[in-house]
Length: 59
Image (cartoon, rainbow, N blue to C red; front, top):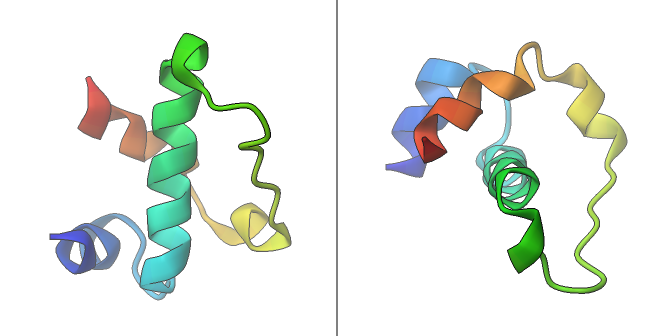
């Protein structure tokens, strides 16, 4: 399923990056459940055109 999401939402982006973006989106939507120390900052995130587009996956 992740490869299908990656192909549709983030064409040309590596699947691992999409997985990190999805995890980051989930954490941002559920801050009380965020484990201590789970902060992911990657320069590659800046290359994704619309990172907020994935938030609808968690609504």
